[in-house]
Length: 299
Image (cartoon, rainbow, N blue to C red; front, side):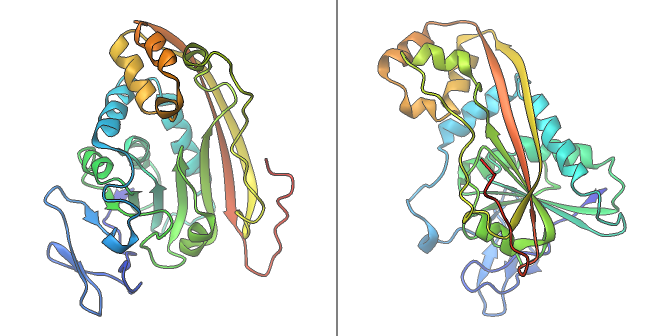
């Protein structure tokens, strides 16, 4: 599959289609968006920002980039790529496929999809990485120039209605209402969340008492217009053998902000950590608007 630049982008100010013009994109009302020197687009306008520098910080992105180089999360990347391919199976190979990584971070998982997609039978594909952090996108663009990287928000995805086949949302913040707007009928959302035992050993070090946890609950109103069609769990053991890798793993999790000082000190003393990776995948399909969706049994 040959990767091409996205042709389904819209103006974040008025929602009209963006047309490429040399190194920029322009809408019919004259709003212009230049490609950054590094090759990405910033479609997060000032009035849509909740803070001056939203999303992951430069330091958090750097920590995640370093940790992912250890290979500890390669099985997760493989699972995401395989599930993405599986749930594109009903699309004719003659058609262009469009995949969005919503909250792509520094691009690890989407780049993995891109490398596997070269062996898929589709003639042409569009891979789009969207993240609200400019630091994440600036890091992501270093992975691949064949992927369309965009600074933007999951709550205002800057894409034409019904133009995306599949959305990956890995350890992020899904916005199902907005996802449904940009998905094609039958399009899939691949939701990736930490499982009950994810990073259990690290949590045992930093907390004196562990609370029971489960998958993030999804209310039926949040997934209105979707049907749960598949689910999958991935569990395995992994290990890092340096204090630097342990701290990078810690820095890329919410526990970095939640843990007590005593827990941070205890973790800082470790030079080796074996830990459980426990990840759950839930796949939702967009259904026709006139079909009622019963999601009462979803977590």
